[in-house]
Amino acid sequence: MAGLQQTNSEMILLSWVRQSTRNYPQVNVTNFTTSWSDGLAFNALLHSHRPDLFDWKVVASQQSPVQRLEHAFNIARQHLGIEKLLDPE
Image (cartoon, rainbow, N blue to C red; front, side, top):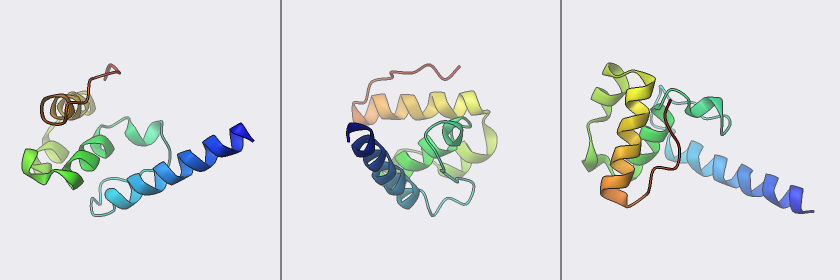
């Protein structure tokens, strides 16, 4: 039962992320691994809730995946108080 509960929770969270990022055509979140590797999903999630923090077009078009991930982690830390728990590398 515990495994089923986690699966349902993950599906709900994935659905919320997909809903939050649906207006970003470059972003297609299908899982919690490879869908995040280019940094677009993380930035889109942040931008969908706080578009005042950065220019989405600049982040989406001009930076490498590692730069986009660093950008998202920095925005999350500086403006939302979310500590960086992973290394973009």
